Structure formats: C-alpha cells, structure tokens
Image (cartoon, rainbow, N blue to C red; front, side, top):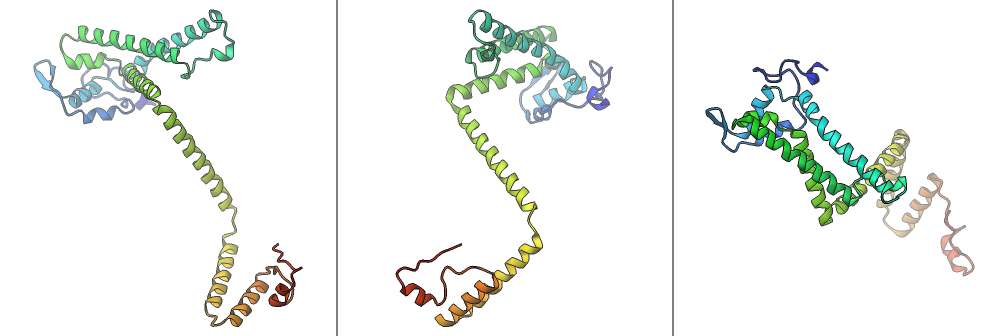
Length: 251
C-alpha cells in the first residue's frame, strides 16, 4: 500500500517519488518528439513525463486529480436524471443515466471538455511558460476521459460501436462455449478413452488388412460383436435385404 500511496513529501520536491505511476503512464515514453521549454532547456515529451513523475505526479496524485472529474460526471448525471423525471415526466426506469442516451453523452462531453479547457488554461497561466510546471498541473485523468468520450462518440455516430459490440458479444459466447466444453472434458475418463481409441485403432487395422469382400464382412461382424454394436438386420444380410418387407433398424 505504501507504493500506491506514495511519499507524503514527494509532490513538489526533487527526487523520485515513492509511489507507483498512473496506469498507462509508461506510454509517454514513446513521446520522443517536441522541444518544450523547461527553464533554459528544451526537452521532449518523454523526458517531461519522467520529470513530472519525479516531481510527484504518481498514482496518489492522479487519484486526487480525478475527484473534480468524478464530481462533475456525477452532477451531470444527477441533473439529467432529475430533469428527465420531473420536467419530462419520464418513469424512473427511463431516467437511468446510461450511455444509450445521446443527450446525456453530449452533456458529459461538453462538461468534460469545459473542465479540460479550464484545467489547461489554468496550467498554462500558472506555469509561466515552463512546460514541466504546466504538465504537472494538468489533470491527465480528465484529459484521458475527454479523449475517450470523443472517440466513443465518434464510433457511435459512425456506427462502429455496434459492430464492435456484436463482435465482443460473439467472442463472449464462443468463450462461454469453450469453457463449457472444457468442463465436460474434465469429467472424461481419460484411461477409458485411451482404451476405446486403442480398440478402434485395432479394428481399423484389421479392416485395412482385408483382401476381399468375404474377409471384410467377417471383420465387420467381428467388430460389431466385440464392440457390442447392435446390427441393423437379423441373420444373413443378403437374405434380409431380399425381402421387401424388411427394413434396417439402427439403434
């Protein structure tokens, strides 16, 4: 827990913080581009992200920055639900704030976008032109949420989400079927299965060695008897089939 919580004095102090990084924070290391001003130096995005973590932008600080975003999100959902129920007189079951409602998605998108604009403007003004200071003041959780909402809305508008959802549901059904099949396989008597396969292999080998129709017929009848398979006819096959009233019965 101490790794997640981080050092109480890591934020704003020099030296690497004791906390862990935010999820996917390592992806900033692919940002080997840009020349951003940090005091008198020019550094790329990857170096800026590393230095921000050293300044204390760890998991605990990220959770703290998520608080205003959560409050904003819940407030919009609550206001939307209350307005839908009292103003439009919708039943409560139709006032559940889910992503199926386009107007709610737009409200969340605008609310999160407004939060990001205010956050970016505040970070830019208070940083004094120092990009590292600006980066450490940015609410990365809110920006990530805003980008995800934009991409999600684009997918919905283009009809991509429905296709992906169907594919995911199909994969889930396949996974459930495989798990069910594996559960049935676990109940299988492996030793009995091996003996059965060996007997079938032996009979197949016997049939392959037959040289004419008579020996093939004898091999098949022998296999039927040893495998305890009921024949679909009685007596001699040729005599049985000569009578039109007879018919094969498979059990």
